Length: 309
Image (cartoon, rainbow, N blue to C red):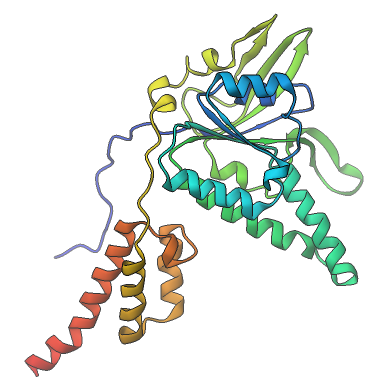
């Protein structure tokens, strides 16, 4: 009897880019550590890295700077830069967004002001959450290392009089961000000129939760060296490969076929979700061709049935 099971033998998985969150209090070395990664494209949402020593670090590494005057505080501008990095050939290996907290809560504040008395049940967070989800989905397609730098916020347990602070966590606005990425590190200053990273959450075997390593040790920047003892440099330093988006002709063909086949919008939405995009224009060429092939096959069925009748 034919089986309906669709499982297949597990394949050997090649490690890919590092995509993670780096959070901590001011002065804990978050930015400096992230900029130690190769050829960073640095999106500065707070204007804190326009100082000479940060700019020199970027310049020495061959990096690029995108700051508030360029539009870095606008989620849509950030996503547009991510899309450009995903689809264009460029020399950058690492994307740093510093911080994610600033655009999220900035947009939330503007929404709260706009809604006024209509703001109920956290309605002011709806738009920032949508933007954060969209950003993460676009980062998934990016062939670069990614560090999302965040402020830290108290983590609480219990309720009412039993509620108590149990530690610190990343202030990302959308809690599920930390579950979407490989690694969450907490930066701490533990002594004079000594900073460390604590593994707060991890999917990587080289970074067990609760483990720690130095970022800066008595005048020496050791973040990248210590990180790459646990994760191969080859994957981190590899050239970024741009994705090939669907052509205008392929998108037009999808829409033409949909006019004929009349696939329900609910099913079309499932295709987009599976492809991790929001429109056919955002699909890769391979994804678009798969949709065209499916629609061609679906369109041919009635004709074949008619010939056999």
